[in-house]
Image (cartoon, rainbow, N blue to C red):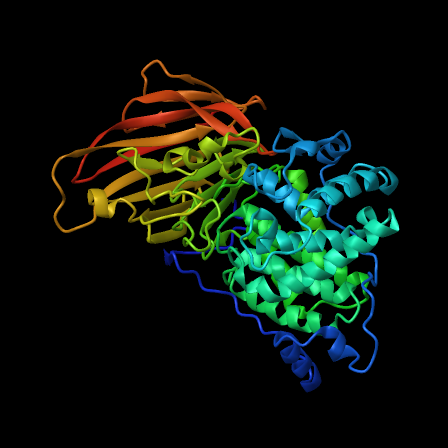
Amino acid sequence: MSASDPEAETVGAAQAATGRDLALADFSPPSVHVGERLIRMAYRMGIPGSMLTAPMGKKARTRLLATVSNTLPGDRVAGTALRAGHFLVHGAKTPIAQVDYAGAARVTPPLEKVVHSFSWLTDLEACGPREQGAPVAERILTAWLQANPEPPAKPGKGPAWSVGNTGMRLMNWLVHAPLILSGEKALRSRVLGHIGATARWLDRHVTRGEDRLAEVAGWCGIVAAGLLLPDGRPRRLYGEAGLIKALGESIGDDGGVLSRSPLAQMEAIALLVRLRNCYNATRRDPPEAIERVIAMLVPPLLALTHGDGSLGSWQGGWAVDGDEVGALVTASGVRTRPLRDVRQWGYQRVLANKTVLQFDTSPPPMPQHARYGCASTLAFELSHAGHRVIVNCGGAASGGGLVPVRLEQGLRATAAHSTLTLDDANSTAVLINGMIGGGVSEVDVDRRTLPQDNGSTATRTEASHNGYAARYGLTHQRILILRDDGTELRGEDLLLPSGRKGKRGKVGFAIRFHLGPDVDVALTADGQGAGLALSDGSYWQFRSGAGEVTIEDSLWVDGQGRPQATQQLVIQGLVSRGGGNFGWLLKKMS
């Protein structure tokens, strides 16, 4: 790591034991006077907002009080596909006319979310003037309303009425109102009635979200409705208190969401930016806590960016394009640097000249927070000058686009990440529906700056996990040393007996290094290494001190959630239950 690098403050021998329970952020609800507290309490007890704002007056008709200016750009390609009659999700086209909007005939999870959250309105807005997009939006909305004429008694009645999708849908309807309310009067009246009914449904069911982030989406929808609908002050006061409490229960004290997913991190930022746009439309300032949360959320997200601004592939996410990440950060208004040591969220970042190292030094998320939980502990990614050298497969959350749904669990497995596996087993159990079981519960981390003989420095990061201790009596320890000029990464994987007395026998091991999509690879003549040629003309050499290196097929999910055929380097063999160590080197030659 370069001494002039702004991320490279001296850390010394910083040590931490990272478990699966993260310290939650602590936010106080907005400060309000006694009268507003009473209004909030009364609304929470079920007294209608119209009675609290005008007890003796006439109930206001449902209408929108302001037009929101959307600052989050959509996907023009997806919007153009909508105008041509298709939903386009992760490269897969689905005709609009073939979607079952009632949710009885289940569609793939990514399409389900796009359809029922109405996130596609942002894409439609991005691809042309309102006059061209409005007829498409009204056609889809009419079909959706026919399939969902009124809210159900409780959440869980199909994907349309999950709390997360409902909160996002209400937000998108309010933010993109000109696209859906500029047509015939009958449709406009029907849509406004459904907006009011949806807001009331969320008032009652928001705390029954699928997870904490889904609950945040529900509260955001409630606050947006409180800002933009008549008699909304009681709902806004109620929603602000609930939202800030939910945010405090959704993120760790370093700003990382509890699912440890960069996709969920982006979703949280986008929700709050849209909500801030609603405040701006009504000439109100959002509560200070909301601005603080946005400021907290951005640096951990940036910690998982490579040199080209695109994301690393972690916890079900894929290599989201740098333009998309940059547009979201710009909309947030937060100007900051990436967090180098996201100790609570569990990712270490080392920036050395043009080289970026990302290292997962934490257990997977707790089951109640996992969305597409992956057994990725002690995996790493490495890029140089924006070109990916070592990657993880990624993309479990895109299963159902061009990535087949049947691959989703495989993409969450330890073997789909650049780390060590024992006996082809996951370091943490990978369950169905994105859930995570037993395995890694503690990770010990040590990071320090080391002086080199030539006067330069290197960053040494060491971490170990207990995911294989119960089954095999072995602890996996990984040491990564990256030189400050970014041209050399030394690694060592150690298997250490977890008890006083090692078990007898041997167990199979494999150390996998999934290669970036633009890497051409060839084995060396002695079988102990490989040459890696990158598309920018640079050449890297990989050497193994732990046995023969082989090349196997792999898969990498790109910035649009589409699969790309790639390759991986594998070192494998048998290791004694008494332990072993395996060194390797990755060095830039030209």
